[in-house]
Length: 632
Image (cartoon, rainbow, N blue to C red):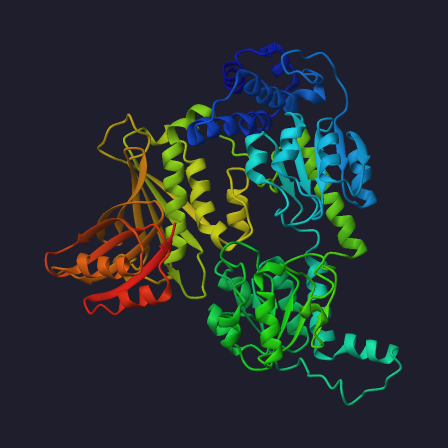
């Protein structure tokens, strides 16, 4: 099947015979991964963005696919022109930042390795068209211009580390380039550095050292505080956060944590209590940050957040600089709300020489050393080298952050349902309240088609994406969805129900049920206590059709306000007036109810996000019993 699909998509740009394929006994999953990576990108361009794809570009993408799959056996050779294949050679791997020798040795066993450091953007673009793989750390920006300059040859970008802020993922996918990272090797190093900053901050080690080297002896000035018996709040209880917790427990600290996805049983196993965000920051003596930088967490520690903290709190950040509003932190340090801070990361790296935060006497700083141990550097080097070599072989990678694997004909049919699935996932996670996190999700697909012929892998992946990505640095696709969900303790089960509808459409509706959680919007709960939402595609557009037991009919576009109200005249006008007075444009309204003149849910689509005062006024309407704002 894979062979026929490739031949049809490429319109026979090269001779791809069944004899060549079958004689190599290559795993089908390898061909499927590589094939879909490029072809799906082009399908997405044509279906979603309306771009015109030339035959030359299409052939280039398919050529990349065939080359990635079969180049190791010499069946498909590499040239600059995909319509004229004549040459064979080892792949060229460009390493643009320093990498441990063990990783370089592994790469050299497979391809030709070129180490070129401190390249300017222009120099990188000049080199990249001669490379099959690129390995970077955080200093190299892999922009759309880089992928354009590669002219279709670049197959994989490896990020030696966790964050991929410096790689344009959308461009990588469009140009058929896989992106992989190394998320595990530096965990212990980052945790140890967090503990080192915690202890040195508490005992003023850096300041006392500088004082002595200046010829002073100031014992009374640098009296510190003890760690034992103090409360440490860990914000982000992933790999690094949990390792910091283990070490802090060994120091005699009381450890609490906030993470919407951390399984409560895993936290309890190491003696950590999961709490809400506000409870964590308001009760902690020390706060250690281990959360990713996402639109949700950007500057989440700001003036408002600092005002809720205990006076004299101490903060450690070895995660991402952007989660702290640095100007607000300086103000909090100056007014005594924050007694001390120890920072390894900054919004701008390196920070300006005249940075008030860096120069502050109550701040300990290090130049992004979280992963800078010999052991971690070697571990990251080996991990990323293995991922890059595997990708060049066409193997499935658990650390891939793009490249869905769905045949183009399936993607074409599922395109609007893919959007629906992700939107439902985003809605579900925003309806969850409390610190327990999501652990169990059930997805029900209603379809008139034979359940055995319904391919829901991409839909499941997109629901996982919608649930996890808004509050995580994970990038979810069909390659890594199940793996990431398992790592985060998220169990997703599926059920297929036969619907009495037309088989011309693959899906009649999708239901998402989240169990064992509290809800910000009680009306989203069913009789069995689960959050339940349902959606379907109408006229090619995803719609929300049910919230809890209430039927609604709203387009999943923009932002959404859900209100539970007493079913009485004038409610639409009252809420509409409040929004209109604040210049918030309403795109639609829909009211659903179970029994006439009792309770109803009003769903309001808005183009802009209302400010807090506007939402407060909506909540003050006497007939409105509860409401929630949802960002789609």
